[in-house]
Length: 297
Image 1 (cartoon, rainbow, N blue to C red):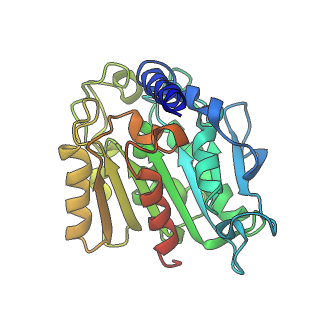
Image 2 (image 1 turned 45 degrees about the vertical axis):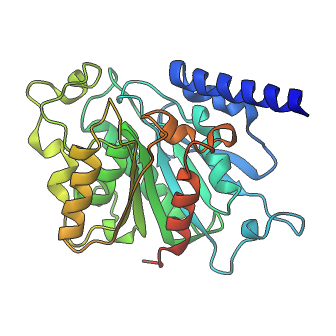
């Protein structure tokens, strides 16, 4: 028994080290595939305008939370990070599986990255994917009144802009008030002047448009919000970004949930969605609770 525990501990340590030092796709090696049905759809023209849909696999033998409710499951669209110049949807299967296993239809889109595009072109892709999800929610078995946008790191920025800045969904004929809520994990919401060299060319540094900052678009009409961060995040300052965004939303009268997770860093905050790293922080449980307790729009 002791030997088994030592082996399990060694595996966990190896996974943590891999996540900290290499692409986060390493977490997919231990992801189950029996909790969801996976489909791939094009939401626009081009290889980077495709998305994966993780639909909870429901049957009499599955967990009760994966049985489809009368009005449909909630739906989350998740945008991954990568400084707007790297990343692909397949790397985040562990996020899609984690949410689908808990009765949430999950959509993970790709979007165009630098150097193919710069700000704000990738936001147009994000909005198109979000609009697709809103329009197709009922067909996917989801409740159109319980649709959320979520993102981590650069994807947290994308989610914030889609949720708060009416330009992007408006361009798709959609109102931000159609969202039940938005979820930001370690997102940069107020980051001028840009210090990250990978992000500088994406936003035309040093001539970054001021209107590129999500903090500018806080209003009383913003959707209900969940913000999570690592308190010692070295890449995205949680005080300036997460706490400041929360304070502005609260001042505007928007319901906000804020959670800081001391045992995580910028990367393991999203890594904690995967089973081997859930001991680090209850990020998954908190996000699921937020989604399932937020009233329909």
